[in-house]
Length: 353
Image (cartoon, rainbow, N blue to C red; front, side):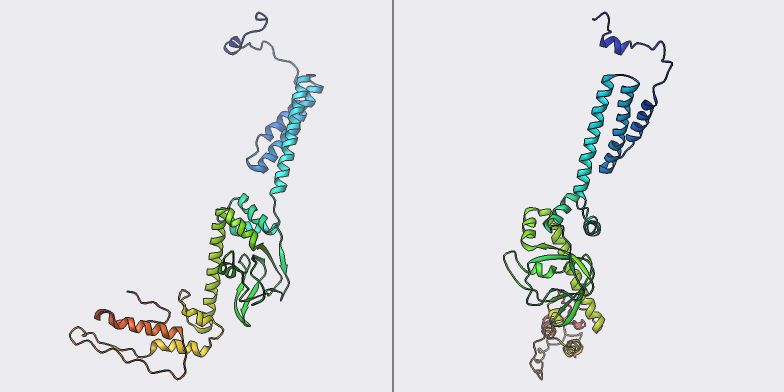
């Protein structure tokens, strides 16, 4: 056997040369199979690239099997190419199943592109979030209430997908909620997982709306299990609440021409239903009242006596703006002489030490 067949060393070092080429070419099936396989290997990466590759390799290997059966008359050529065709078909079935499983409804796809894709959230994480809300899109017709003040319990967290929702308290309009904003982010953040409460505002759909909702218990379990999703929801909720606060600030600025500082507690009395325009005007006039001036030469003269207490008001009223003003005056009286020449502080500013 060693004399009839060359060894591997002779085959590699001294390969046999072709003394005569075949005079006839192979059949059309062989050349067609080669062209299809060549095109198949030009596919890219990813699931669609794999679909392209195996979608062309399967007919290419099928043409090779036909060539081995009809032209080459080789059983081994036929068997191997049939196995390759079956392998490509099974791979195509697996890719189609993955593609069908990974697809989400159009609303969720738009939500991913708008909120999660800019943060480079992986699709696997996004599917966990969508799975928690059961991939269901809820709807609200025009003038339908999502929540009623003092009646609707806080047992879910919802995100508006389309439409516009009006937020009001005691019949007074507060602000709007637009698509891709949470409907009840302040209520969600106001309660602990073990607490219960009701809405303090009324949410009414001004147009036909659609939204998704996460049940409170299921979402808490998801946030406890996955810290990355918990940080993601925390950032989204914080941004949403800040947007709502600044929308309230812009509303007050457009109405009164005065921009308030939302970080101060005095804004609560401005936004409360008991506040009126007369109280706001009185709070605006307080900083312009005459302040005790000590002069610039206070270092040469004896220290002046503290100013007398302000006369009692005509009617009792506990205003946050007045208390802020009195606190700023008391603090200014205890400052050294070079710092007493400053302008009086506004009710929405804090003194800098």
